[in-house]
Length: 430
Length: 166
Image (cartoon, rainbow over all chains, first blue to last red; front, side, top):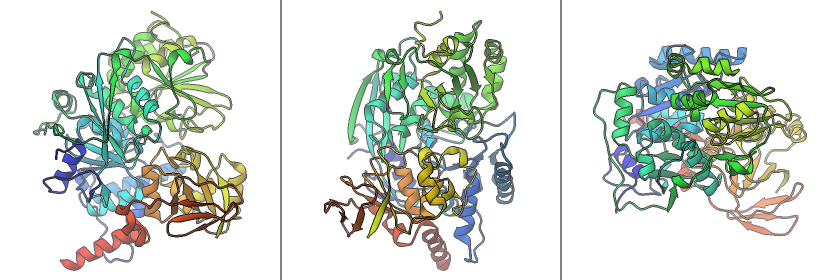
């Protein structure tokens, strides 16, 4: 019987010829990522070793990455103390893939991992962040876990008792129309599957629209598979994956290019013709409450956000800059832009996008998670309505349960910033 | 037998259980003060420790969807709640098992605040309405961790056993 992508990766990570959905395994981990919640992982890690007489050393410091992104720079003394605790820990343990608050190597964890070549096709990646699903874009099996689970990984180098997920195959054919983007595809899919439609499943992406999609776009779709409950999203690695890792991430070693077996068994197959897609909007207060833009156009907006691990990459900023060039953000609308990494920030600066945003009246913030989860900056007032290229719109998400968040693509966000209401980029402006 | 003290609907996210703005608080002894904080009446009672251990929260589908933040499980473990839901989101389910929070998967559960529930090996009996509802077992892959009392004691034992062999 043939194997899916995840079955192939888990067979390799457990030295077996074949595994199948439902098997319980303990796969080796190639990359274990945490952000500020590493502080909690450290507590749990110490707890495991308490009274054992064993030396509390992580299994392999070269396979651990810690990236500060949720609250950078620290917004409170409590966060600053958590960050200090992590700094001390990485120094003591010899963890070198540590990204502190710096202008030359900082950013959001799900951008840093691909950008620095920390993930390779065929890897098993775990992260103490639900959007760890992102790295499936590079052909890895990559999923979110909690802090205690990560503490066990730090101790053992493997994930305990992993049940091999069943897979939903999503075949995307056709060509995106102008101002329709991978974000619209994934919002459409989440609306179709619902918030729990892929719970405990992996979503494997195929089809000509995926083959022609950049790694940046693949990161968008894999990132948000968790919003349908998926354990992970995955794209079979191809020439584009090699191009990205070699040219953009500077990876020198040989890369393993593989696909699922032709007779792999899937739980479900979904086909989407992206040529027919319109810009999509996820409406309050669930990500699966997805509507085509024409049903919500005209809703007044107080805040627009472009950024996050979903849509804060250079191509996202390029789309927004093109629309905003020479225009102004509407009166009484605030626009916040946060590039996903400092590398992207610098590239955007050199290309003139940052100047375009500032001249339009947008505020460009430092790289990080920013307002997305309401912990740091850009909190909403009671009754505020926000439109964001981020990934969640749960009640309270942007810091206030009495506010509303709509989710969209960068093109929709930029076009709407000019008018101050939800606007179809194909109609607004030029 | 224990009482249902709080009832919530489908797709209750970790942003509702434990909002992101309190994520800098990580200690399990401190997280319960922020449990369901945007539901002030319930949260006040949690803070005042008004609920006896094993008090029940009843939820709909996909409880705990969203973030991997473990505080969403630890804030309910502290007051020793039992969560009965139609089903749970994957990461929340694993976090809760790792921390030893008691969860019951009961796809057809019907219960209201104030109802008294009793648990058998395979059923939830609503003593107030007189109806019974089948329980779906937690993932079998995780049973060994539940039996060990959580992932920390489980991992500690594994490490000690491995060391013993060398």
